[in-house]
Image (cartoon, rainbow over all chains, first blue to last red; front, side):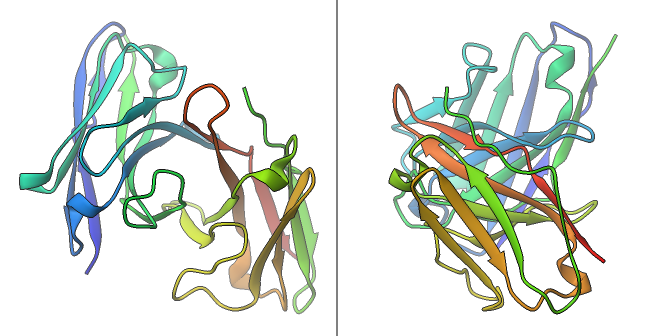
Length: 122
Length: 109
């Protein structure tokens, strides 16, 4: 079964740091671009970041650029999001997702985890 | 930055056809992806690359894209189709960024 499982979400103070993880199984992880997408409470979807299959290309939303870092460990079938200088507006459910097509960086996201909740509050 | 505009809500009777639009400047030159999200659940990809359907998605779901508007069409709407629907594109004009529309709540009357 193709599966993504996120972890690492907690309550953190503004200015703090956090590392999210996403464990992948059921597919050849190192064939696919991976994404982080977030959803603030009661709001729509917001793309956060992507990393290419080999980690050679990374892209970020303007809202997180310079504060968040995406990475992957293909030997562990794992995706990460290092979040620094957190703000209250980063409070959201964070999903990891897999690109639909091998090697693509502009496809749809066909497999999603159930998300991990990050709350930034004092 | 690139903006996608969706109507906040669409209502349709069971058995009828629902059309959800996604507007953007020359969106026809981009590939559009559509997601369905039910309350408390993760999004599900229902259409990718404008009109392709992932395995397991009913043929009732179809997509088109031309000019400044992309459209998700749901034929023979069922109660189980009630959900939020989001369009999404990749904007590579200055960098490579994902852009989601604001979402459309589909209500089945």
